Length: 242
Image 1: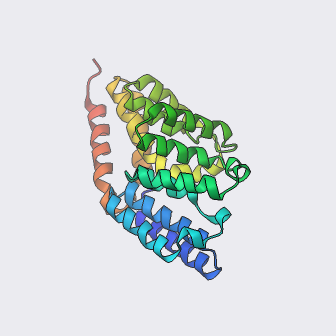
Image 2 (image 1 turned 45 degrees about the horizontal axis):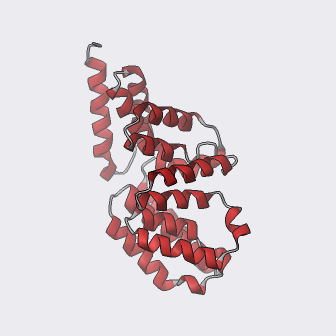
């Protein structure tokens, strides 16, 4: 819902609780989530990197039991921050430290693999990884679909992107809440833009309205994006169909 300041506080509380029960892996996972907030909502990769650097100085990975290390989160974050070199090093380290059976049991490993492939400019490999995440994510029936839509969009395939966005937005599942926390708002906005570009005004308006409803009480720093979409809605309402 765009309440990023509240999310910052909650993840800080998660980290404090993890420290209190001597769970350094949980504290690191909370730090990665804090870093992703800086990256995804504030477009501050330097701040995201600083959060991770501080957290790993406090809890170096080799001081954390291997099964408790949040490798998939760290690989994803570093890849998306434009540091595929670090992400690749962590992926190799995970392969050496964590048994394959443990890695295969967590479908989110495919998400990390997709993010790393994207960062290394291998969109076909990224798509394969995201499809595997979608296939193995169990109850999270939306997992992987927004990422595949983004890749199709970047490849100049708007119809394929919209089909994937539509599937992702319609997919049920209680466990998708963490996915939606980061991906729902951009999926609504971008699919609205694609429908608007196709001249499908009703579908574009529906996506824009859902975006505005989701972020109507978002933090002030996000309100310029809400105003932009409100303006698009107003324009669509007054335009005469061609």
